[in-house]
Length: 111
Image 1: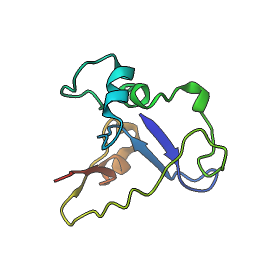
Image 2: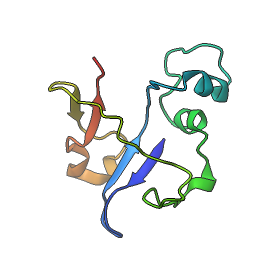
Image 3: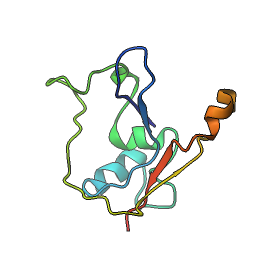
Image 4: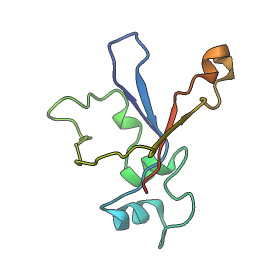
């Protein structure tokens, strides 16, 4: 999983990326995962995304907005169509009480 803080210090604005679908570099991600072909769940869940993207604890706390960052986020020019983004309640945060029910879990369905 990749956790990207997107807001000011001490204010919770975070994006947690739990799954990816490569448009490029699938062979590299397969090799990094030790796989010879894609299979169900090969880029979903804890650890698999990090392994595929070669992200590890040395990346903790890096600034993605710094020109020398080892991780670069780019605008791929995608256009998201109506109906492709779905939201639902958060998972695994029962400690958050009523906030756990907020529809802050988003999925992008690439049609």
